[in-house]
Length: 267
Ligand code: ADP
Image 1 (cartoon, rainbow, N blue to C red):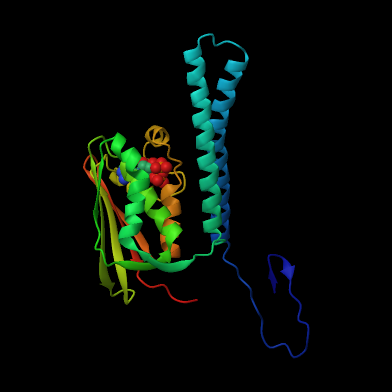
Image 2: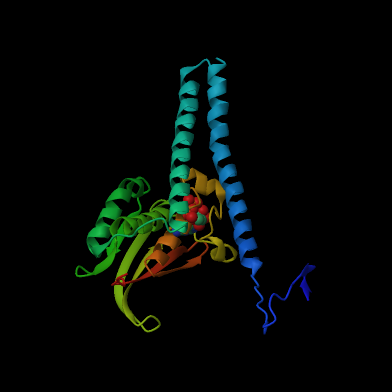
C-alpha cells in the first residue's frame, strides 16, 4: 500500500494492523491566512501615520512654510499622528499578548459601582465637551471577582466608543444587574452600555469585533480610534469566561451587553 506515493513497509512478521495519521490542515491554513492578513493590516495601519509625519516634516524642513500659523498647524498634525502611532502600537502589542494568552489575570473582588465611577471620571472631559451625560444605574452592593485593570479596560473601551459615536447632547446609560444563568449554572452580572448615538448598520454588526474593522473609517480616525478596541474587549471578556453581544439600530443607538460570572473558577 502506498499513500501519496510513499511506500509503506511491513517491518515485522507479527504485523497485525496499521496506523494512519491524519491531520486536518484546514484549521492550520485558516490560522495562517488570518495571521498574514493581520500583518498586512498592521503594516497598512502603521504606514498611514508614518507617511503623514514624514510628509509634513519634509515640507517644514524644506522651508516652504512661511507663516507661523500654518507651520504650527503642521506641527500639530505631526504631534497627533505620533500620538496615534503610539496608541496603535500599544493596542497591537496588547492584542497580540492577549491572543497568545501571554497575560495572567489577577483575580480579586471588585466593587462594581466604584469601577464605573472611575471609568466615568476618565471619560468625563471628553463627554463634557460634547455635552454627553453618562448615567450610572448600578446597585451599590454589587461585587465581582475579576482582574480590575482588565475590567476597567473593557468598560473604558465600550463607554469611550459610546462617547465617540454619539452626537453632542446625547446620553450613555450604564447598567449592571445580577442574574442566574441556567446555561452555565452560575451567578452572573449582566452589564449594559447603551447610547443614543449613530448606531451600526445591520450588515456590519457581525463584523465589528474583528481586528481593524470599522463601519466608517474616517469617523473612527477622527475620534482617535484604532479599530482594535472591540476585538481587545471581546478577548478580555472571554478570558473572564463571559460573553459579549450588541444590539443596534442605525440613527437610534447601540447597546453592548457583557455577561460575566461573579466568581471565577480557581485554577
Ligand atoms: P474604533 O477604534 O474604530 O472605535 P472599535 O474596535 O472600538 O474601533 O470599534 C469598531 C467599530 O465599531 C467602530 O469603528 C465603529 O464603526 C463601530 N462602533 C463601536 N462602538 C460603537 C457605538 N457605540 N456606536 C456606533 N458604532 C460603534
